[in-house]
Image 1 (cartoon, rainbow, N blue to C red):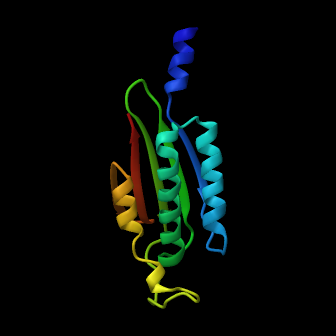
Image 2 (image 1 turned 90 degrees about the horizontal axis):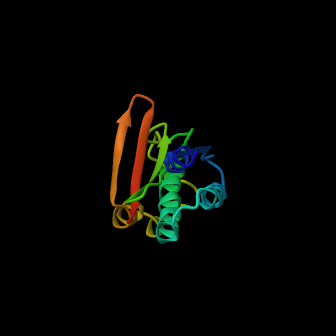
Length: 140
């Protein structure tokens, strides 16, 4: 019985939620992600960085891409390294290239650099359904 419980505890956890293209969505998605990470007992050493990555990737999807967008969190706990994967998938680049109302270019443009600085690995996957931007944070 103990071996079965140990196996279940080490199983990967996954959570998916929408990222709606509305005001306040990033804060709501960040709060939801924080609650999920707390439920999964994700180690505190990566939670704050993970929440910043969630914010940056969700903001990117809302500002630069077409809806729908969704956040996917995957946690692989283990005896050694533990990996949290953060993905945001959207429908691809927005058409028209028009800046959004209230968009201040001086306030934006650093998200990808922030994600790369915080993540152990990160990247972009282009697929028929759109674009997935992802980052992995590893806790030792």
